[in-house]
Length: 516
Image (cartoon, rainbow, N blue to C red; front, side):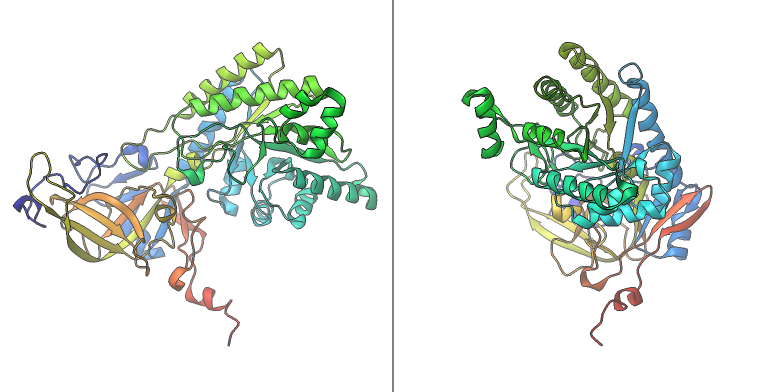
């Protein structure tokens, strides 16, 4: 082992085990602004603070692990999307409806903030609808997604008067129509009831992201295909009888759904919806999807005389989990999308539809960091794959630093190979950087919180570590693996902190155990 790779040597050499994208930091105490809420800073003593509240205070009062959210930062990011898209689309369709994607993180406090900042709320289940109702959001501000909605979820959506149900299949379209029609016939109060529906289409646009979060290609569970020849045999036969075999061969499942929806008195077809994936930085995919759906919308008007007034272009805008991630500001996203809608609508000779979008991660992701208490440190000698260009050494040290949480509060690394960053939060340090793998306490070798990061060589037991960018899909995917209680979420604002989701206790877990 080379001397400069010995733990604690004080040297500042890059580790040969570090991935190519991970640069040796100039100063381990610096914070990369794009990864953090705007009100996170280091105090003069070196401790991390958010909204004026120190991490040691948060750990003492609320315990660890802990999700720490800046309420002001959440509100600012929500406003930024609303203002940017309204401005960009002012001359296109008068503004944009911004739906916060509740699946990324939702509780009643967040639902209330969303409404207060002028946004709407997208839900994906009866449970999420229940949270929205608890927060007092009116039904017209809500949408309901899901590829396999139950009848009870559809009924709850109708009870609440949701602004739209995003239909994912022909089967679901028929069930929504039947449930709405039955209510209209059975209850005089619902005689005029029509379910407001959008059709989720898969435009076949490839998003440069992980396979499991790319959602617009053909081979996956979501949406109605726009590909020619994907309509049912019955609909193809109907088209063949009216327009010939050539037309029948080109008809898609998406077109079949438009025709079916137009034929139901109990359905009010609002428009079309698509979502091409998540954690996307490039703009081309969004622009191509907008162009394809506008073209389809114009074709449906010509074929069926159906004018669809709305088009939802989804979300999936990426955030910075590491220093090399390059998120685009809302203004840039909005202007690029507005240009495509404006030009494509003009080319097609149609009035631009009312546009809506669904940012979730891009609003909540960077508002939050997870606070952990460090425990066991372990140094492991690892064989290198081959001699480096400047060294003949064959081994290097990888440090493992365990924390008091793990895959039960952040499943994304094990699900998607997601990369995160980490800093020493309870103090500053001038120790040498040591390549470190931050791992959890669960009984799984894949229980990795941060795969590769440089931490000070003296970071260890008792220190607080902060992992930024955990606002989206961390608490939402959390579990009780190894019977750990899920961490709570604290919102910080104006120098004070409060629970918005209380952490689970052992008594919470045992209260559901009915065996004794």
